[in-house]
Image (cartoon, rainbow, N blue to C red):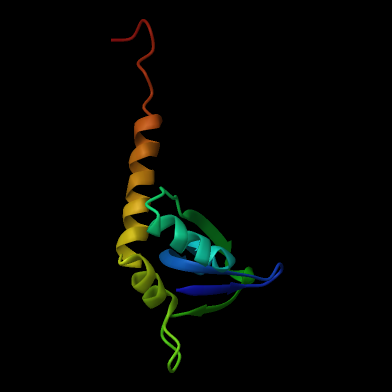
Length: 114
């Protein structure tokens, strides 16, 4: 998906996590960082995609990431340059992030309680 935002103008590329009348939650990156992400993934560097919420009043357009004539989609470009499926890469990075958050949020038992 490519989401175009207004006020301020911005574009995000990634996967929709949740869509409701209130807004859109997605995991991904700012479109301006796409080439940097490709290089990081290609070099085997760890990355954490953003998990963001955009209120509906900021959303101008939501587009499927499809090829345009002879121009490949962003997903196709990601796959061609990294050899990895972007949906799997984004979701596994999200799964890793969720696991890290769960591990770090474990609350130790309070003293004096059984």
